[in-house]
Length: 149
Image 1 (cartoon, rainbow, N blue to C red):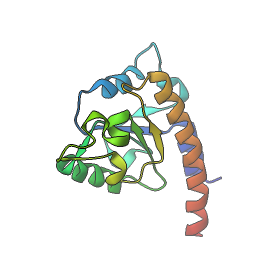
Image 2: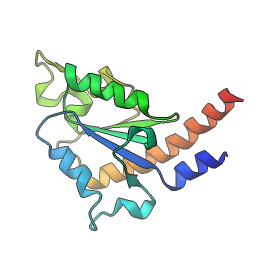
Image 3: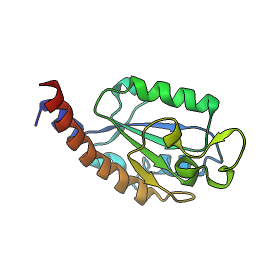
């Protein structure tokens, strides 16, 4: 395992992007950072810079404008990367799925690896998904290293 892959496994950096909606899932993502859930005990750090992020957490409904921003953030993240769609709006569009201006899910804008289809997603489910994302990062890192050599 490369040093980069090992450091990502021990301390993955998270980037959260709220595309728009009721902010219920976004509040639950931020709850993961509070002392009650303390996601940082697993070495996870929240970052605001996509160039430092390993895991992209998407909440809310995706429209044309937020979809462009989402694709831009995703393209700036270094390989390997994992995307988690949190909440039913990010997974399928939720109650807005047939709206004229919304995409039915974040996977219409970028590839999504993990889905949490709850309204609103529980912090425990988000933390479990991020821990699963760390394992996916390790797998993707191995295949990425193999392709590079």
